[in-house]
Amino acid sequence: MSIKTDLIIYNLSEIVSLPQVVRGFAKEKDLGIIYDGFIAIKDGKIFYVGERKDLYKFDASLKIDAENSIAIPGLIDPHTHLIYAGAREDEYEMILSGAEYNEILSRGGGITRTMRETSKTSLDMLVKETVKRIYEFVKSGVTTIEIKTGYGIDIDSELKLVRALEIVRRDVEIDVIPTLLAHVIPPGFERKEFIDRFVSTLIPEAVKKDFLFIDVFCDSGAFNVDESRKILSNGVSAGLKARIHADELAYIKCSDLGLEIGSVSIDHLNNTPRKVLEKIAKSDIVAILSPTTSIYIAKKMPDVYTLLRNNGIIALTTDHSPALMNLDMIETMNLASIYFSLPPANIVAATTVNAAYSLRAEKIGSIKEGFQADLVILNVKSYRYIGYLRKRDLIKYVIKRGKILYRSSNQKL
Ligand SMILES: [Zn+2]
Image (tube, rainbow, N blue to C red):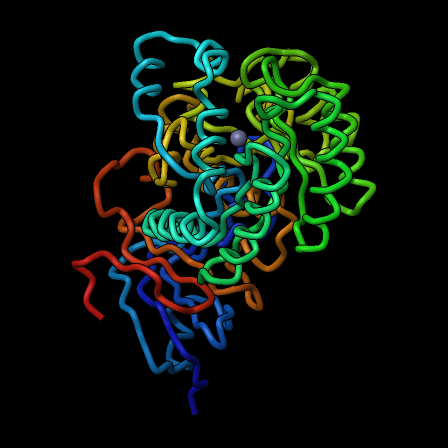
């Protein structure tokens, strides 16, 4: 008698299981590869992962022949600004032709422009647009996504975004992890007044709506270190965990604040001095890095190899925002290969298990029995092709909790 399950994926040349957080340069053993294997899924969870020789013991209502492809955990984007209205394609052109981000911001463009457009947009429309963007991400293998608030022009429109995120989180099939972000001081506010109201109104509301994280854009042109400390420490006292945008545009000691406050992640790190990077690498803080932001906004790469040589934990993000609408996690993996020289084993860890750790998300990020059946089947025979073989249609299947959310058009069931 065979064991009945819901879905079996077999003929997998590699199952890259990533059993635990990967520090420093990933070694092949960190990947936990099962060669020529299969995965049995039941009730949305991974029921069994094994080698072909044991396949006969299992049966399923649906079986997929992976035809010598690989399975990796569902991809996780741990840093996005997905909830907003409007576009800034003209500013993107200006950046390409040499304009600095802070120059655009000081002329009323950048974040403040998106704040104005977002605040004029209805709750329903914001939800609809965000859901649409999420399903674009799914096509690139994403099964869990973190989304930050931060484009409200005043406290009321920030409250609208908190509410919208609550609805989005309920309405989509993938996991959405909400973060309350202090982005920039909206035009017309005194700095202290905005921060006080952020702390007294938005933090309690986010806690009430089950937000997990608080984040601050700590940088030149955004919040300074003392302001960021006040926002984050109040969030932490209210039960949220801290994340921080640090050193993207300039080094004003925001990464030091991340260390001081025990942030779960420190994101960007484009201008961070080596000594601080070494401290981050030796801690349990995840360094979340964005190739696209590094190329187009920071115009400077983070020192990825100092983080890796010192055993740091690295995750990757699209950092999707209206500054640059990157909805493609595979592209992000490719860009990390080109611009960060990140080895393929690290790329896979940085978009799965390490990203899950940065979100304190349990039961995702690894292919393990009892974990959520979140998987991506990639049309390559080894993980070593990641970043190396670039083509459309790299993804065969995207599976969330055992359900096929996406399959490329040439895949037959
Ligand atoms: Zn960001």
